[in-house]
Length: 128
Image (tube, rainbow, N blue to C red; front, top):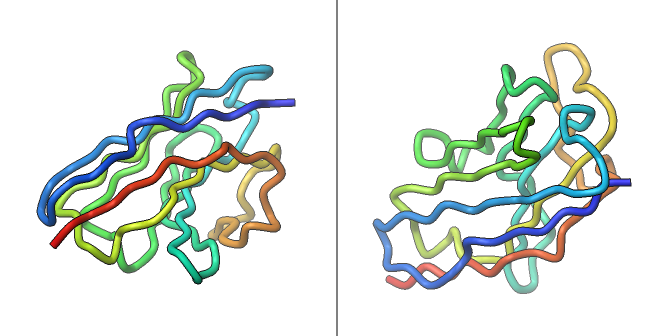
Protein backbone atom coordinates (compact mmCIF):
# COMPACT_ATOMS: atom_id res chain seq x y z
CA UNK A 1 0.00 0.00 0.00
CA UNK A 2 1.20 3.47 -0.79
CA UNK A 3 2.42 5.99 1.80
CA UNK A 4 2.16 9.70 1.09
CA UNK A 5 4.19 12.56 2.52
CA UNK A 6 3.41 16.20 1.75
CA UNK A 7 5.86 19.09 1.88
CA UNK A 8 6.15 22.68 0.72
CA UNK A 9 3.65 24.42 2.94
CA UNK A 10 4.40 27.61 4.79
CA UNK A 11 3.47 31.22 5.44
CA UNK A 12 3.06 33.48 2.42
CA UNK A 13 1.56 36.89 1.77
CA UNK A 14 -1.57 37.29 -0.31
CA UNK A 15 -0.69 37.27 -3.98
CA UNK A 16 2.28 34.98 -3.44
CA UNK A 17 2.95 31.44 -4.59
CA UNK A 18 3.76 28.06 -3.10
CA UNK A 19 4.45 24.67 -4.59
CA UNK A 20 3.32 21.64 -2.64
CA UNK A 21 4.84 18.24 -3.22
CA UNK A 22 3.49 14.80 -2.37
CA UNK A 23 6.06 12.02 -2.32
CA UNK A 24 4.80 8.46 -2.53
CA UNK A 25 6.46 5.24 -1.42
CA UNK A 26 5.42 1.62 -1.18
CA UNK A 27 3.89 1.56 -4.64
CA UNK A 28 3.79 3.28 -8.01
CA UNK A 29 1.41 6.21 -8.19
CA UNK A 30 0.75 5.34 -11.82
CA UNK A 31 -1.90 2.97 -10.44
CA UNK A 32 -3.60 5.70 -8.43
CA UNK A 33 -5.87 8.60 -9.15
CA UNK A 34 -4.61 11.46 -6.98
CA UNK A 35 -6.02 14.59 -5.43
CA UNK A 36 -5.24 17.49 -3.15
CA UNK A 37 -7.71 18.40 -0.42
CA UNK A 38 -7.61 21.24 2.06
CA UNK A 39 -9.18 21.73 5.45
CA UNK A 40 -9.54 25.05 7.25
CA UNK A 41 -10.22 25.12 11.01
CA UNK A 42 -13.83 24.24 11.69
CA UNK A 43 -14.46 23.31 8.08
CA UNK A 44 -14.82 20.05 6.21
CA UNK A 45 -12.07 18.63 4.07
CA UNK A 46 -12.70 19.81 0.53
CA UNK A 47 -11.15 18.79 -2.77
CA UNK A 48 -8.93 21.38 -4.41
CA UNK A 49 -7.67 19.52 -7.47
CA UNK A 50 -7.50 16.00 -8.84
CA UNK A 51 -5.62 14.16 -11.55
CA UNK A 52 -6.29 10.94 -13.40
CA UNK A 53 -3.74 8.15 -13.27
CA UNK A 54 -2.09 9.24 -16.50
CA UNK A 55 -2.26 12.93 -15.66
CA UNK A 56 -4.14 13.72 -18.84
CA UNK A 57 -7.41 14.59 -17.05
CA UNK A 58 -7.39 17.30 -14.43
CA UNK A 59 -10.13 18.74 -12.22
CA UNK A 60 -10.21 21.87 -10.10
CA UNK A 61 -12.53 23.35 -7.54
CA UNK A 62 -14.13 26.52 -8.86
CA UNK A 63 -12.42 28.56 -6.14
CA UNK A 64 -8.93 27.73 -7.44
CA UNK A 65 -9.43 27.54 -11.20
CA UNK A 66 -6.90 29.67 -13.02
CA UNK A 67 -4.68 29.97 -9.93
CA UNK A 68 -3.71 26.40 -8.99
CA UNK A 69 -2.25 23.65 -11.14
CA UNK A 70 -1.98 19.98 -10.26
CA UNK A 71 0.63 17.82 -11.96
CA UNK A 72 2.20 14.43 -11.48
CA UNK A 73 5.50 12.72 -12.18
CA UNK A 74 4.72 9.03 -12.28
CA UNK A 75 8.34 8.10 -12.89
CA UNK A 76 9.40 10.09 -9.85
CA UNK A 77 6.38 9.00 -7.80
CA UNK A 78 5.36 12.57 -6.96
CA UNK A 79 2.33 14.80 -7.29
CA UNK A 80 2.53 18.57 -7.17
CA UNK A 81 0.22 21.48 -6.53
CA UNK A 82 1.40 24.83 -7.84
CA UNK A 83 -0.51 27.59 -6.08
CA UNK A 84 -0.36 31.13 -7.46
CA UNK A 85 -2.16 34.35 -6.56
CA UNK A 86 -2.83 32.98 -3.11
CA UNK A 87 -5.63 34.44 -1.03
CA UNK A 88 -6.23 34.38 2.73
CA UNK A 89 -9.15 32.01 2.13
CA UNK A 90 -6.68 29.45 0.74
CA UNK A 91 -5.36 29.00 4.29
CA UNK A 92 -5.63 25.48 5.66
CA UNK A 93 -4.00 22.10 5.94
CA UNK A 94 -3.42 20.58 2.52
CA UNK A 95 -3.60 16.82 2.14
CA UNK A 96 -2.51 14.54 -0.65
CA UNK A 97 -4.85 11.62 -1.31
CA UNK A 98 -4.82 8.53 -3.51
CA UNK A 99 -7.24 5.88 -4.67
CA UNK A 100 -6.35 2.80 -6.69
CA UNK A 101 -9.12 3.32 -9.22
CA UNK A 102 -9.52 5.24 -12.41
CA UNK A 103 -11.91 8.15 -12.48
CA UNK A 104 -15.31 7.34 -13.91
CA UNK A 105 -16.11 8.63 -17.37
CA UNK A 106 -16.54 12.38 -17.40
CA UNK A 107 -16.00 12.77 -13.68
CA UNK A 108 -13.70 12.38 -10.75
CA UNK A 109 -13.77 11.56 -7.07
CA UNK A 110 -14.42 14.68 -5.03
CA UNK A 111 -15.28 13.28 -1.60
CA UNK A 112 -12.72 12.35 1.04
CA UNK A 113 -14.38 8.96 1.59
CA UNK A 114 -13.61 8.06 -2.02
CA UNK A 115 -9.88 8.04 -1.32
CA UNK A 116 -8.07 5.26 0.52
CA UNK A 117 -4.67 6.75 1.25
CA UNK A 118 -3.74 10.05 2.86
CA UNK A 119 -0.69 11.99 3.83
CA UNK A 120 -0.28 13.77 7.15
CA UNK A 121 -0.92 17.20 5.66
CA UNK A 122 1.06 20.40 5.27
CA UNK A 123 -0.02 23.78 6.63
CA UNK A 124 -0.50 26.69 4.25
CA UNK A 125 -1.12 30.11 5.77
CA UNK A 126 -1.82 33.13 3.58
CA UNK A 127 -1.63 36.49 5.31
CA UNK A 128 -3.52 39.54 4.11
